[in-house]
Length: 213
Image (cartoon, rainbow, N blue to C red; front, side, top):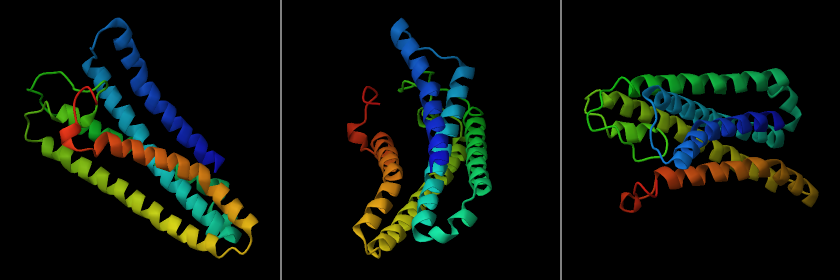
């Protein structure tokens, strides 16, 4: 669990260092400029770290499922080598996902100005500036990425249903406490991740504004 928490912490630090320093610089110096290469770097790094965070959270859910529902097989299913392989797969998948999105987004021609309604470079805001028909490729990639995120969410919900069913079969109150304390760190981080992402991207257009963004 702590190995995966370390990986998750690294993704969180990566997201912060990708967006916040530049935003603070712009705020302190009262400017709003970013170079084309800097914008591309922000898109790549932000997509990279967010994707890895999503995959790591899903792997952590599997880790909790095995530890509670199949404790006798934990050493076999989630040994140090298996954990390293899963973490490496998450980082590699995130890199590939970010590379595809960045390459697709910055191959578009922009004809609706160069002002983003956001304090950092984000794909939906860049697509608003495009007049190229090839933006449909990027929308297709976004749909695929969204579908993968939904699959991760469904897997997490299914795993926790199995976990809660297993916990309810535990006869002792001490066993309940141990099981829930095992899941609590993951549930806390998962709740924060989903609630903030939902508020950011799924709110109604009627309450959306550049200042709120």
